Structure formats: structure tokens, C-alpha cells
Length: 196
Ligand SMILES: Cc1cc2nc3c(=O)[nH]c(=O)nc-3n(C[C@H](O)[C@H](O)[C@H](O)COP(=O)(O)O)c2cc1C
Image (cartoon, rainbow, N blue to C red; front, top):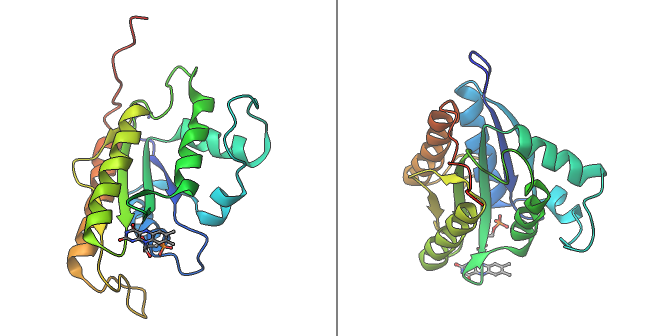
């Protein structure tokens, strides 16, 4: 990031449900990032659902997938939100992350050097926690830097009718993730170059 420039934070995640709680939590995290000076772009559930299944034999084409890749390339920070589906990341979110294979040969491959905030919404605490661990493992594999704080949300009702978190601890988790992404975004993190 150039000195004085505003950090660019990309959000991806949510589900195709009209009232997706993981997407709402992601939107809240991006709003916090904006309040701290970021520019943001959201790739939400319906966008992710329109991406084709990642196919290693099908070279990346243009269109919406290229727009998504371009945003990740330019990102100083990324925030990912997934529901817990059967104890892990949803296929929708994992497919989007698999598409980052398009960035394999970049100077800054995959999520290299990017702070990555991880948010999970699930019905129960067990899936919220196991899914957060799974998501962090994927981010590590993509050379991203998961923030120390991740959000595992498992309240019976996440948002009230006004769109506010029902539980202040959930708000604290999501806002904390966004704050940590912003704190790291300006540091210009970069992993050492691979010797091979
Ligand atoms: C296919 C499917 C599998 C799910 N599996 C789990 C699970 O293993 N554990 C859990 O606590 N909740 C599970 N849930 C509940 C979701 O994690 C929860 O409803 C989540 O908030 C949905 O995200 P959304 O509101 O963004 O759509 C599952 C829901 C669906 C639709």
C-alpha cells in the first residue's frame, strides 16, 4: 500500500439466504473497516453462487471471476465470512477460495502478505469453532495472515429486528476482527520468497 493511501479491504462470504447472518456479520465488519478509513468491496453469497465450480483444467476466463480476482490482487486486507455447514466451511465459500488458484503465479501469490479476518456463523458453538479452525487452515494454505482474533458466532439470534447484534460479545468479535485487519493492512506484510 502506498503511503497515505486508503487500505482496500475485500469481503467475501455469506450465503444465498435473503437474510444471511454470516453476510450481515461480514457487512458489519466492512462497515467498521470503512469507519477506520478503508475502501471496501463485497462479494456476497449471490455473487459467489454465480461463480462456476473451480476446474483445474479450465483456464481462468474473464467476466465476474476476473473482477473478483482483480479485487483480491489489489486488496490490502480480506475478510471472509462463512456459515458452519456440517462442521466446516460452506461449499460456496470454499469454491470461491479455490478460485484463488488463479493467483498462484502472481508476484504476490494467493493471499500472500494480506491480513485475513475470519468470521463464522453457525447454529452451535461446536461447528462455529471447528469451522473457524478449518477456515484459518485454508487461509494459511493460501499464505494469508489470519488475524489473532477470529469471530465464532453461535447465538440463537444473531441480529435483532433493527439489524443490531443481539449479544454485545458477538459485536465485539466482529468489530475486533475488522479492527485487526485494518491494523495489519498498513504494515506491508510479505512472506519470504520461496527458495524453489
Ligand atoms: C446445509 C447446512 C448445514 C449446517 N450444518 C450445521 C452444523 O453442522 N452445525 C451447526 O451448528 N449449524 C449448522 N447449520 C446451521 C448454519 O450454520 C446456520 O444456520 C448459519 O447461521 C447459516 O448461515 P446464514 O445465516 O449466513 O445463511 C447448517 C445449515 C445448513 C443449511
